[in-house]
Every structure is written in structure tokens, then in C-alpha cells.
Image 1 (tube, rainbow, N blue to C red):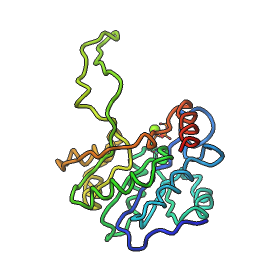
Image 2: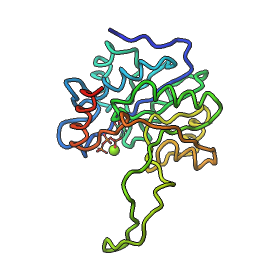
Image 3: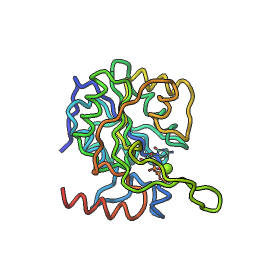
Image 4: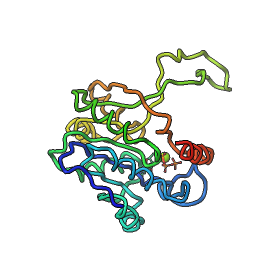
Length: 230
Ligand code: CTP
Ligand code: MG
């Protein structure tokens, strides 16, 4: 059944999905690769559409796949599909351009985090709505982290208590994300990183194990297991 979005919602979700998926190995663009019989992007969009305050979903698809992605997602939810760019931030910028003024909260959410629960989308949006201009979901870092120098010689152990692993959706007041993009794209930082550079405070909220990013073949196996367990 096609999901309905909330016409009175205040949230747009941008879904960069135009990556090649090189680290996943051969098999086509990652967002279109199958997880338990359905493309990652379908899993992701279904969960985004289930978040009650979402009014608009904009997917940045690989340019040659735009029509195919429109057809794929039409039965899932009403989605705007635009061609993505060469780097993730170009894809985010293309999707952002499709968000009308008047939508106050903009979330940026990787298609590769296909199992992200609607509750996390809502909690990030709620934190922005409550007055934080920029919000990121995070988890504590579990491994010991070493700083290393030339020749893989250990220089020291990093204090893990001050580190966080960052997920998506990252949430912003619309004008804050628009201003960060207008100030110039940096392909090597995430959306929150671009906002940080402008001096805007970014706050953390608790992330979710289910929002893991599917990057390597092992992650597909883990995601299938998570899907069965939930
Ligand atoms: N992405 C995008 N446009 C790009 C590159 C990435 O929209 N030019 C999207 C991906 O589709 C993904 C998200 O950004 O949903 C996070 O990127 P990543 O996990 O690195 O995905 P890929 O770039 O596809 O994978 P890889 O780096 O292994 O090629
Ligand atoms: Mg990539």
C-alpha cells in the first residue's frame, strides 16, 4: 500500500542515494542492491514515510536511474526524485534545491542506512523543532582508538569518552542547511560538518543500532540478520 505523507508536517527528508557502492563490490548502485528481496532504497523510504511529521521526501538517484527509481518508489510513497551528483554533497545540494520555503526542518538521511527506524527520524526532527539549529544522532565508540604515525607506529591512545560515532538522519533548520550549502560545498565533510564550520552549534541525540550504514558485504549480512530479529 502506498504510504500517505503528512500534508501538515514540517519535515523534509533528503535521501542521497546516488552513490556507486564501490565498497560493497560489483553489483550496481548500492541504493538499488537487494536486502531480503527488496532494494535498500525501498527499505529506507518505507521507514521515512512512516515517520508522522514527514511532509516531503526527496531522493537523489544515480542520473541514469532517475526514471527507474521513480517507478520503483511510486507504490511505496509519494517521493520527488532528482538526479544526484558526483559527490555525496552534490547529491544533497540537488535534493535540497527541491525543498520549498515554508518547510522548516530538513533532515539528510543516507539511503545506505536502510533500516533506520521512524522513531529516530522523529527524535532528530523533534530536537530541531525544540530549538536546536543542527542535530546529529550518535553512538558511543566501542573500539579502542589509536593514533598512528608513519610505519604504523602507535603515537598514543585517544580518549574514547569524548568520541562519538555519527549516523544519519542529520537534522537542520532549513535556513541553516541552506546557508551552509550557499557558503560552498566541501565534498569531504558531512552536512553537520559544513554547518559546524559556520559556527552554528551542533548537538547530539542518541542514535540507533538499526541506523547502521551498509557499506561492506559484511554489513548486508548483518542487516539481514537485524531485519529478521526485529
Ligand atoms: N551518495 C550520493 N551521491 C554520491 C555519493 C554517495 O547520493 N555521489 C549517497 C549514497 O548513495 C549513500 C550515502 O550517500 O546513500 C552514503 O554514501 P556511501 O555509504 O559512501 O555510499 P556509496 O558512495 O554508494 O558507497 P562507496 O563509497 O562504497 O562507493
Ligand atoms: Mg561513498
